[in-house]
Amino acid sequence: MGKYKKIFLDGVIFSNPTFVLVLGTCPTLGLISSAMSAMSMGLCIIVILTLSNILISAMRKLIPNEVRIPCYIVLIATLVTLLRMILEKFLPDIYSALGGFLALIVVNCIILGRAEAFANKHTVPEAAMDGLANGIGFTLALTCMGIVCEILGSGSLFGAHLWDFSIALFSQPAGSFIIFGLSIALFTKVMDSVTSASRAKRQAEEARRSFEARRGKTAKEA
Image (tube, rainbow, N blue to C red):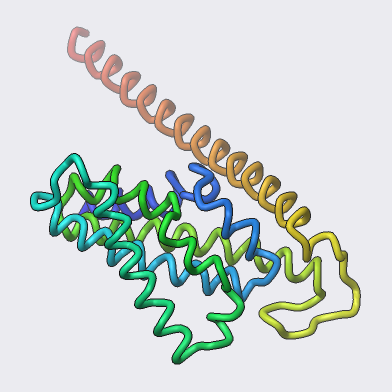
């Protein structure tokens, strides 16, 4: 379980694809002006990333190394096409809101990156956990930024009107870029603070143990 916990925490927090690796910036900047669109894209990424990781891991010994990238793209494109057909049939509003960004999932660097860096080197359960974790990390990041942009830019939240005050800049790509940059800075600051506190706590514990060991040794010599 420790191995899967590490994979999950890496994907969601320590190697977050949006705030740490800064991947998938195209849908990020294009969709975070609306919280619903941002969350919808995140959920689509979870589905495609998890399924593609599972399939690529399962077929990693069958795919020739020389053509692995084209094979990944064909597989991902098939999954994306199926997803688009399902959304167009059953969730047309979400399909319309996401627009061309749905098709761009095929070449999303998060999905291709996890396929190349992780899925083709690990077992199916590990690849599934990695895909799920990175998808969740991406979704949380997009949704949080989408909430901020929608509140500031439209005075609403998930389409529900909150107040009349709004700043038009934050409903445009330029405002999304500003929120994206500030979010990365905030996330980095928080992670640095947590890491520093954890390191200080660990050093204090090691110093205490060292002191107790020396005191015990001195007592035995006495």
